[in-house]
Amino acid sequence: MAAPSLEQIIESQRQDWNRVAGGWEKWDRFFDEQMAFLNHRLVGDARLRAGLRVLDLGSGTGYPALLTAQTVGTSGGVIGIDLAEQMLEAATRKAAVLKLSNVTFRTGDVTTLPFEAASFDAVISRFCLMFLPEIPKAVAEIARVLKRDTWVAAAVWSAPDKNPYLKIPIDIIKQFIEIPPPDPSAPGIFRLAKSG
Image 1: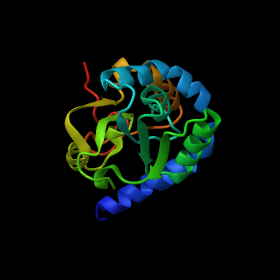
Image 2: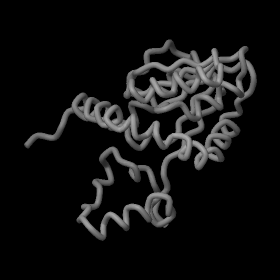
Image 3: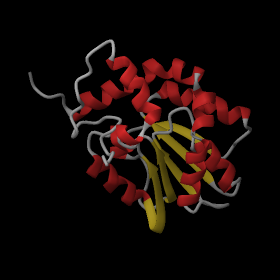
Image 4: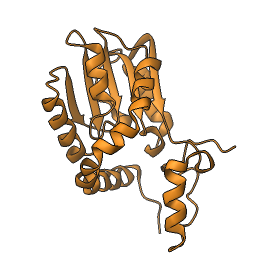
């Protein structure tokens, strides 16, 4: 059996995230509260301030794009991009509730960003990069759309031995079913994690 093509991997991911969008939105408030510290860290690490134009990669249901929109204010703007349109529908609803007019969400692939060169002052990403099938291509796209002397702030999951948030549920599941170790080079939750 041939390995799936890049297009097949991306389409599979799009379908998977759309399939879980309803459940994700149901637990969104809990997850966003748990990750609030990280959203603030990303905003700080990207040196965000009023007036900046920011791209959020893998926006999902909206965070950290929504916090970013509050930070850059109406003189700035945020575009969140994600493969899954159903996740972005949830993000759009949240933006409306928060009355944020300076954030928009678009479906798209991080490896082929639909933006002009040097069009953003910062790029942020929370838990997206490790799922990308072609990380070097995504990094090249990020560099292309960023202005000179700007910032990227990204978060990926730590290794299971340092990550009880994910290790505990995985260990519980392993008591009932066998989970093969993931291919370290394939897109996945611990792909960019360092052990030790």
